[in-house]
Length: 107
Image 1 (cartoon, rainbow, N blue to C red):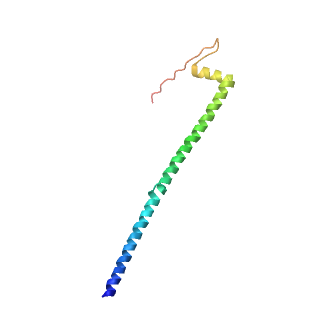
Image 2 (spheres, rainbow, N blue to C red; image 1 turned 180 degrees about the horizontal axis):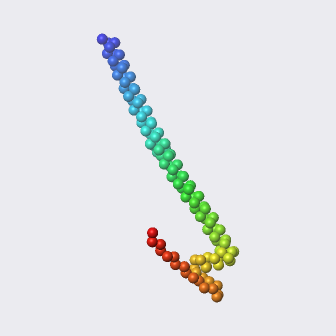
């Protein structure tokens, strides 16, 4: 009778230890996946970093275009004249500026 009681106690202890180990393993997996430094957090940070990098690249291109425009405005008189004619409808002495109005098409 003592052997049956002791073996059932051993079985119960083994089951308790297994349960604790399973719960501990599940807790570690959850922490690994969803913790502060988990896989999900790393994934979201990588996506955010990629978006920021794209924004930086776009701003660099815009900066280069603006710097080119600045140089043109400082040195290229033909470009300045072109801007004045197109954007501000200016003309030289003796020239006439015509405004073209497009007809609305009924489709």
